[in-house]
Image: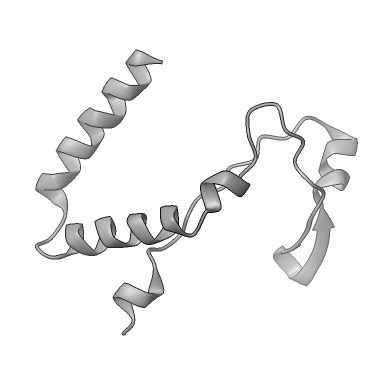
Length: 90
């Protein structure tokens, strides 16, 4: 765990040089807003089961997580695709 923490700290330090002026402050504000929303308390924890869900995939076809799991194990990558709209899109 210490290795991961040091890698994250190194990543954050390197990003400070790459983020344009003002953007870092917006990112920090958005991170604070997200944490204050309570989302961390509601998030899945290690060992929790992912609820089944359905997504619209290519060719406008709906597919459930359980459909994929019936065929093979699944690696699911979930990422936050943007920063808080309240700070950016005002």
